[in-house]
Amino acid sequence: MNAFEAEGLVKRFGKTTALAGIDLAARQGSVLAVLGPNGAGKTTAVRILATLLRADAGSATVGGLDVVRHAARVRRLIGLTGQYASVDEDLTGRENLVLIARLLDLPGNQAKQRAAELLTEFGLDAAADRRCKTYSGGMRRRLDLAASLVGRPDVIFLDEPTTGLDPAKREDVWTIVRDLVEDGVTVLLTTQYLEEADALADDISVIDHGKVIAHGSPAQLKRIVGGQTALVRPADPERLPEAESILARLSGRRPERPGRGVVTVPVDGDAAFAEIVAALAASGITAAELSLHLPSLDEVFFTLTGQREAAA
Amino acid sequence: MTLTVHKQAPARLQPRPFALVRHSLALAGRSVTKTLRTPEQLLDVTVQPLMFLVIFVFLLGGAVSGSTGAYLQLVLPAMLVQVMLIAAMATGVNLSTDIDKGVFDRFRALPIGRSAPLLGSVLGDVIRYVVATASMLGFGTLLGFRAQTGLLGVLAACLLTMFFAFCVSWVFVLFGMVARTPGAVQGLSFLVIFPLTFGTSMTAPKGTMPGWLQVWLNVNPVERVMDASRALMLGGPAGGPVLASLAWALGIVAVFAPLAVRAYRRRA
Image (tube, rainbow over all chains, first blue to last red; front, side, top):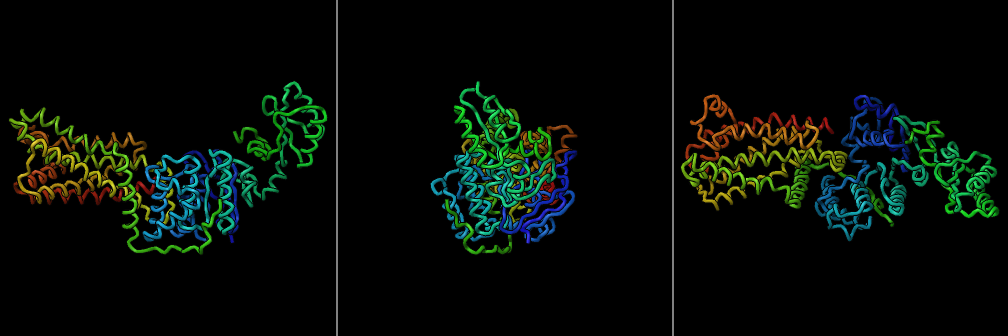
């Protein structure tokens, strides 16, 4: 059974169409990543599934319950972490969690106990009794996540949980998501990074202008968008053309120059990258930067829609 | 980082009775904590009433009542009502600021009554009325105000005034839901507060006013509350004005609370 399901969701705000009929679904205990640029409709879709917003057309269920007709029961099943860490700045971390526990009808001592549990699990013990306005971005995000877990939800909606976090903090959030899934929770995660979707999701829905433009497992999607990209920045900018011709020869594709002194080309696997490294070394080109990465959202969209400005 | 967040079997939370009351009170507690932690938000109910009192008593006291002492007796019970209404106004402004922050989204995604966050804020702001009353009466006493009816009368005047302000605060909550910015809420609220509180016998005897203004005083509900407050603190027949005040308060809350809740749901 699907833990949540959305069918043909349409939402308009005045003349803007935020959602133009999208379908989303995730099996129980899986992670669905909704990948798309700002304004694609990710947040709108999450808000409809989380009962905060009503769709103009289409339907959505969580745990088999309609999000409009059984909103109150759906709210007992879900946890929500918004795009901007939604903790109360004037309250301490502990007070934030206790309040939510009280609102979930936990009796006083259980509410305190649950808050203490979560504070420890999210590494916030030392800061528990400080006001949240003194928290760093990463701490707020952790508290926000903790807040959405107070009621032990079956389904968690994470709306861009790592936007604005530095890479180390991002890894922390990823670890939390993986642990949740291990415990059987179903996660809907919105993100602007293919890398994040690839790291966490069982399935990815790519959305743009309120429509799903691609759906599949990370492996399927990567096959469509051309796998990985090798990037070379020669230490000596004069040797860029040489590096470019090496990349062209080894990959059989036309390299691009996305920035000053940098050349990139899609490659088919790690082996191809090793060949590039060897070839560069053989011609005596030292690289200031040499990396292999997944396509950026921009590149994904270029491949899927043929429009470079889609993700701008 | 290791997590055992879900290892226990999820204790499915069962709804308990009186949920709306309990949730509203929990949220009111939040609001009170916030208010007490940001004392600058209390300026309008601490420093401002004192300023009003000083300005009116020393500026107009001699001219209107012959002495500042006599004028203070007359103006304080009425000004208590004005100060309380200004305190109530802040509820709408604060809510307008609060709602656009993510924390209200979280409340709305919880299995609690849709109006609980709204009720919580309105109830929590009762703390502001208490602070306003204390600073008004405290400073007034320092200046020489003496109630003529005893503690019970003063207490009754304060409770009546607070209850009235609480009911009227739903008007400002409605503004908070309808107007787009906190600034607009404040502007709109002052448009209502000024004629209601200054268009009274607060600062000058009714008999000195032109006829059309006396007509306004006769229909102005705030005038009834000021009458009641004076009668309860200074003596005189209090029954009529008290009943009229209570009737108005209940009428206002019966009309505006549902409107405010509806506007809030629509905005949500």
